[in-house]
Amino acid sequence: MSKKEKKWNKEELHTYILLLCANADNDESEDELKMIQTKVSAKTFLKMYTEFKGDSEEEQLKKIERAINQNEYTEMELAAFRREIYEVFFTDCNFSMMEKRLDWTLDNILY
Image (cartoon, helix red, strand yellow):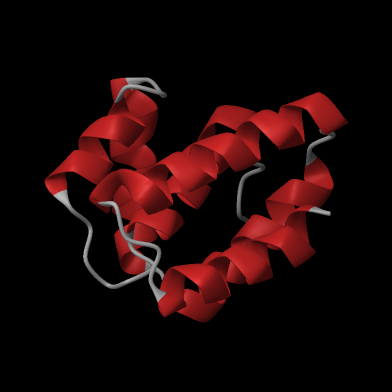
């Protein structure tokens, strides 16, 4: 990670986490990406998708943890966020073992 990383706003973090969820089973489907695009601006999606593709799994999780700590979330925001995470996971009507593992990891980071 670069020492001069910019602080992500909530929409950027939101987008990045949803992209991670779409890629949890190493298969981002067109439906998953379209669903994410309906939830965020096109500009933010493209910015975060480009960044996401350049990061390793370890970098992705570190960036998410750092950004969660920099932004304050209410319980209601986190609950809504979790619903959207599950929306991405279940877009393909399958909750794989890799998605379950990521869900557990995100649960530990978010709460």
